[in-house]
Length: 128
Image 1 (tube, rainbow, N blue to C red):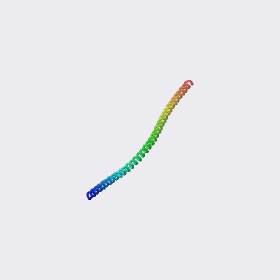
Image 2 (image 1 turned 30 degrees about the vertical axis):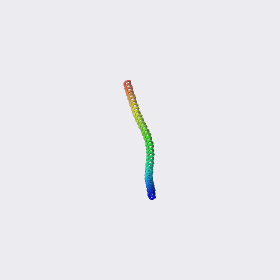
Image 3 (image 1 turned 180 degrees about the vertical axis):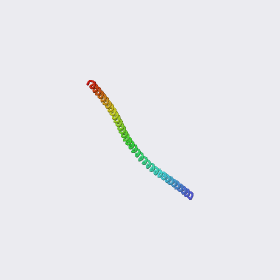
Image 4 (image 1 turned 135 degrees about the vertical axis):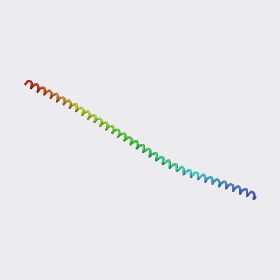
């Protein structure tokens, strides 16, 4: 009976050791799961930060496109103003040349008229 009791005691002790090992293993697993949960939470926060940065980047890209459009419009407007100034300067230059041609023509007309008048006066003096 003592041998049987001792054998039963050893079997019960082994069962407790096995259960303790199982509890220790479960505790280790729980610790690993908890650490993984913290890791996943950190990853989730990082992903949220990345998402916010991505949205900020998209907003910056939109702002840059708007700025580019504004710059393009202003550059086009400036180019058109420059072209208008060039045309105005050409117009003034042509107008100045036309005035010079008219002045020369008028001077030539005055010269011819003066010469005609002098030759008429000379003829009158000869006849008179």
